[in-house]
Image (cartoon, rainbow, N blue to C red):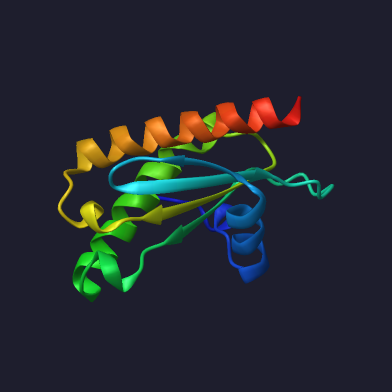
Length: 120
């Protein structure tokens, strides 16, 4: 589960990550990552976007629960002041948990690598 302290709540945080961050995309999801310049010592913050295009309410909630669980396991691998937005695409509704995890790992590694290249 994704701890409450690591959940993104403000719309401005979502907007900053999506517009200014690096992106890593896969078949079932897209990851947007940016690093915060705030002096606060908190760890990474994660936000989820699961639109109606993914499916009905039951399907969207299932996808959100899966993504929250997967991101909770990966918090330690993220840069300390990062802000991550995971946007589910329609194929996420029919993707298995294992395949969703593989897509997430691949997209995260791409976004982290691109963020490192950008900061040089």
